Image 1 (cartoon, one colour):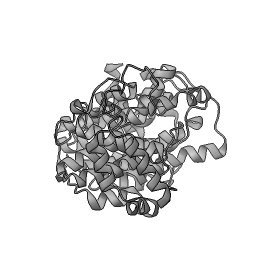
Image 2: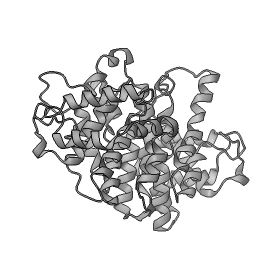
Image 3: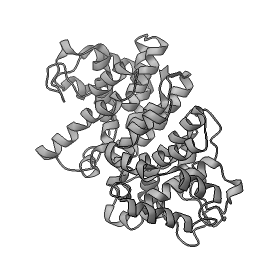
Amino acid sequence: MKLDLTDTLYALSFALDTVQEEMGEISNHHGKNVAFISCIMGKYLNYDKYMLNDLVGLAILHDNAFTEYVREEYNNGDLLDYEKLKTKLMEIVKLREGFLKAPMHCVVGEKNIKLIPFNSDVTNVILYHHENADGSGPLGIKEEDTNEFAQIIHIADLVDVFFDLKTMTEYDFELAMKKIESFRGTLFSNKMVDTLLNSLKFEHIKYLQEHGVIPFLKVNVETEIKDYSDDQIENICLFFARIIDYKSSTTKKHSLDVALKCYEMATFYGFSNEKRIRFLFAGAMHDIGKLVVNNDILEKPTALTENEKELMMYHVIETKNILSSINGIEDIVRWASRHHERLDGSGYPNGLKEVDLSFEDKLLAHIDIYQALREKRSYKESYTHEEAIEEMKKMNGLDMHIIFDIDNCFKENN
């Protein structure tokens, strides 16, 4: 399957940053800001387009395990107590004195990042991105043993943590650079401090404030659509599905399971190999818009208010908005953004009817319903396969032929 991976990461960055802001991260648009500064430093160091692509991608994803780490570390995957959590979140960006283990989001993030097919060997970049030049970081790794990408992301990360780039004045910028200079030889190597001070200018900050990060990256980072193997696409899907599903305990594994069932049903119907992979991708990404829905709504154990229902339904529009920024996946965007439409026009967000829906639109919608019924949620227990099929037969706006085929495809496995 052909894909512009860097473009895909740009699309994901908006959703990732929204999650971090909701959970109390101290910087708005943190991932994008780190990518912005890293890109400027990489260009100053004359990185070629492949290295720059890798650096920017890693910067965007440096906190990719944020939600996974927070949920597993503090609540074993159950509903989170956000008040208790707020006092602990600073551990993610400020290491405690005497904290001798690598922050768990670095460990988990390092494992996750192996799923992404970068151009070069990026081993330990995420794992070491909180290491200090003098070895005082969590793993005691000194600058000479730390990947240069990790060093760049480390300094860019802390610049965004320490300073508010969105409101920074020229005077603030000068003070910030002096502060960074004071960490020479301790937090940051001489080379990293020199690179930052020589490359990052206040004009860059003004551009960020006026235009945002993504337009800058699109101009300065040369991307390309590449042909990835089926295994690589499956790993990319797994990576994205993990991020989406860990947003809420109510959706844990939902995107991944929908993606796998999309592939199975595509095989059942005899889709071409290319189309099977694209349908898998749509299944993995269909709920990416939920990353921008507040967890108070996603995890509410009682009925939603009308206003909350509208906010929940908006996730489909966000899915379309996020995916539409990726070149060359128009069919995937359509399938993913219509998974709540129904044949009788009772679905959302556009109230489309059967005549407006492709077979793939309908199939993904039915798979999503089936998988949701099979899962335990805050407001219900899980259904057996037989119970889910019977429940779907009672629902309005569904296709009985597709329900019959879902029954035949999955009943032997249940």
